[in-house]
Length: 92
Image (cartoon, rainbow, N blue to C red; front, side, top):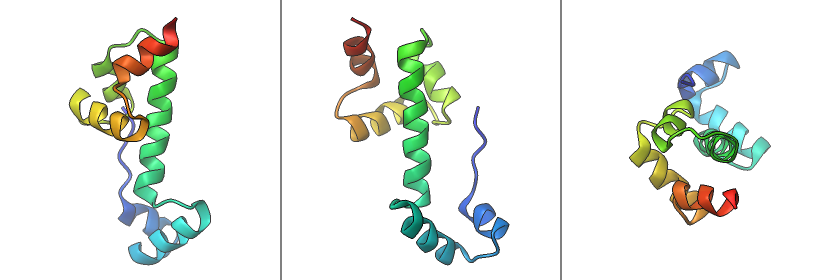
């Protein structure tokens, strides 16, 4: 499972306060650090959904979500559909 990286740790690595790091990160990437990480996890989940037969629980665990329910909610917010429907629509 991916390791959770705290904002404080990232900020400390580059010698900035959390607030300054967040502003600089958003200015550089266009999204807040949490949103960037969430997008990366969801992209990895999409890859797993189409390239593996892993269960939704396994995909959730492998991509760092607390559980399948948390994964499903985040996926639906981002993609407008559930992971199961999204997967099914791409399998045929």
